[in-house]
Length: 229
Length: 229
Image 1 (cartoon, rainbow over the protein chains, first blue to last red):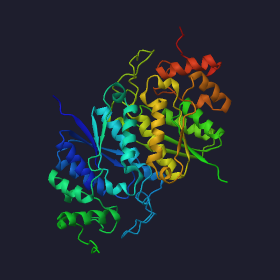
Image 2: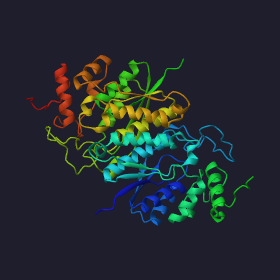
Image 3: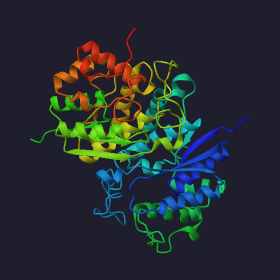
Image 4: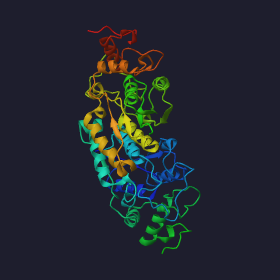
């Protein structure tokens, strides 16, 4: 019997790496998909490659889809400053990229259908849920309906399943799960900025570092982490 | 008061050109979006540019999103022959590109949100409906729900509206509407193959040519149209 295949959206961050390892632990052969969407730096794509190699994922697709060309986010627009030290207090952060998850999941559906994969693993989680509209459980449930209606396999057989194993996890839960699954945490890259080392100041670094410390792995936190209150 | 803006997915074919003209007739400023998705030829993108120019659309985005890299369709895979003369009788044609409309609409949502457009016009129609799963009204209705959940504007205000003015039209209806709206039909390109002139034999040419003749415009049909039964 053939091993079932799952597409994993691998950004290079901790969450997507954990989702990839979870797919393997659940018995799937993982096909990685990373998107060059106009992000400020290529550091996270390099991380995705290193993680795929570590997890022995042999098929890793990288697709260009330059959402940055029409602007709308501080993550793709170099003219918009990144928030630091928790100053981005809007209900939806400036780092939100319009439609990004909708585009990425659509690409994963296309790849899954073309390659005969039966599931898509997503690193979407509860921390993002608080700010990004396209990380919520009702969003995913609606996308699952769309997946069933949109594809040849959905019409003719079983729809491709969207699996978001971390969706209700806290960042500390994710760190613990990552360790259990053997995720190479030091290879993952979560910082919004580029450079040789994570900045330790952007929202993504702050949430990650706090979780690593709380979970008992301060050695993996950014060296220049600001003291916690 | 500012003119409301609508993103139009402009493939270069008759249907999307008609949808673009309809958006303008409905009072929208049109922002065109075309996708280089790995199709066999660039002829339809050239047509999209010519149509945009004719319709005085000043913003025309072209995005690379190479769905052809993972295969799955005769439209992107040069090794798979194109069906001719109606021989493609499968319930879903081999020219179906997995997830294509799902990806294109996701990209349009991203562009619309980034640019502040309030609607997306789609040339999806009832002829495609018969074979392609991602052209059906229930698919569009579900995507509308997703659009409301996925975006900053959907969460904080009015969701972006998906408008498919041709969805229940026959091809003959579309030709008549195109003529009424002043669509430059000879500039549009519907043929699945490339080349200087349409082949007149692929499914897309056959449906278009038959409709042009029925609507009373045989001068726009492919010269080498096969005699109809």
